[in-house]
Amino acid sequence: MLRIWGRNNSINVQKVLWCCAELSIPYERIDVGGPFGGNREPEYLRLNPNSLVPTISDGGFVLWESNAIVRYLAARHAMGTMCPEDIAERADADRWMDWQMGTLWASLRPAFIGLIRTPPENRDQASIAAAIRKTAESWAMLDAHLAGRDYVTGPSLTMADIPLGATAYRWFSLDIERAPMPNLEAWYGRLCARAPYRANVMLPLS
Ligand SMILES: N[C@@H](CCC(=O)N[C@@H](CS)C(=O)NCC(=O)O)C(=O)O
Image 1: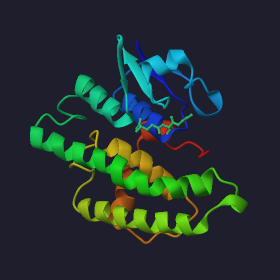
Image 2: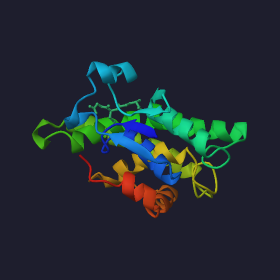
Image 3: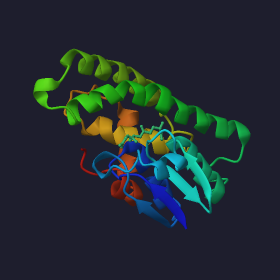
Image 4: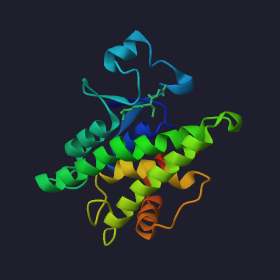
């Protein structure tokens, strides 16, 4: 059976858990990271020398990097649906997954850590405000892209929606002012209507 190492309140672990739930992939999850620790133990470092979560083992094949894991599971279990078969369509999904990691989450993370994981008296308000401004600009790009599309690459959910959707929950949960983005909000509403998203991503933030 697929094994997943990682605490379930991590955005990167949630991508994998949500993907498994969408595809009805059975798995065993081991709590690692955050208050559970274990990620600096030699046994874990042999699996993932980054000492980060998530890590999976699928029949002895070990993989880390959350978006790579989502791609692997989608290709293995849902080629032609969650993983687009057409090479150009798959590159389109890959592009948005890379953008989530390199641009969107990179800009939102300082605001998320500042507002959710830092006591008010220690917050760097200027860097939080800058992160929110930058992230809003990125969301505006996705908002424009989603005009006329139900999901990121077209009419149905694909692997491209997974990292972006996990990020969207954090964005929409922050107690901040957000400019209206109707296409983005409609897409987020479609994700919120999915039971696997609610069960694996829409958890209390900590
Ligand atoms: N690029 C990596 C980043 C992984 C990452 O930063 N994981 C965080 C949790 S979201 C982590 O392991 N933090 C240390 C911990 O939880 O103890 C991925 O997408 O898998």
